[in-house]
Length: 127
Image (cartoon, rainbow, N blue to C red; front, side, top):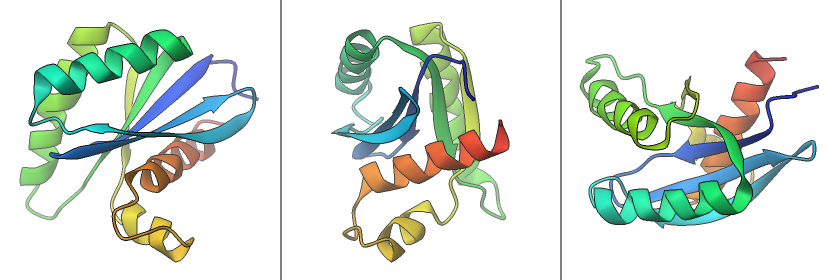
């Protein structure tokens, strides 16, 4: 059983970021906020969710590409999230989470579904 409190997972995106929560033993979708390219708006929306849900930990999906360029860009935003919110932040390989979400019946741009898969992967790795 996870005693880490409420965990917020992010399917980080430039234009949209999907959210999912682990609370009361369940993984639930929490919708979509703006993307990290609009940092001020993104961080304000994230701050509201963190406060409303009393989040104790954040998990961010980071793509692992052969070149590593995309992962480095995401790591920059992960560092900014750590600094801004002063919460423990973990990363999970999010490669193919959107494909997996579509296979589970999600639409082609289901960032919330991808965030749920990121969170489920994190929980499975941290049992």
